[in-house]
Length: 158
Image 1: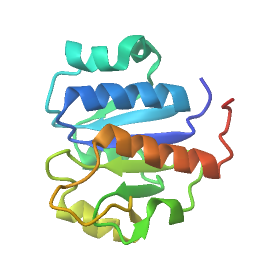
Image 2 (image 1 turned 120 degrees about the horizontal axis):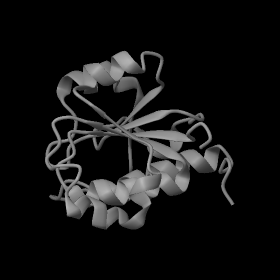
Image 3 (image 1 turned 90 degrees about the vertical axis):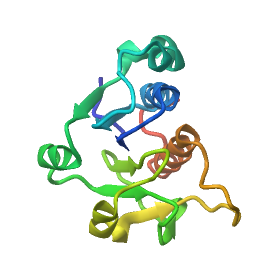
């Protein structure tokens, strides 16, 4: 496989179906998937595999023990945080091949410490003001990924 177009990072994902759907998306856009523990499910669960259908064998993924473990493996990573608390819209960021986009837990987002460290690259999707939290995680990953790929002129895609 070619060098990845993107790196999608899920911080402590909780819902196996979201992770399965995101894995399927990663395969089709040539993105690596990074999962940061603890996971809210066993990666071998049928729900994860079913959501990713038969794409899972083609997925390049890594499981990291912690965010610190992830950073130690990728110390020079260009990191964007996908968060409802971002100061810029996702379409304002300037993405490059190999960038890392970090998504928080479905129930609580990203911890304050990570938000503080990367506040300059915290980006969001515009949404109406409502009492609900945000879009579904797998939908959000797709929106961010395709904007980044559009900016890169959809590398190695047809």
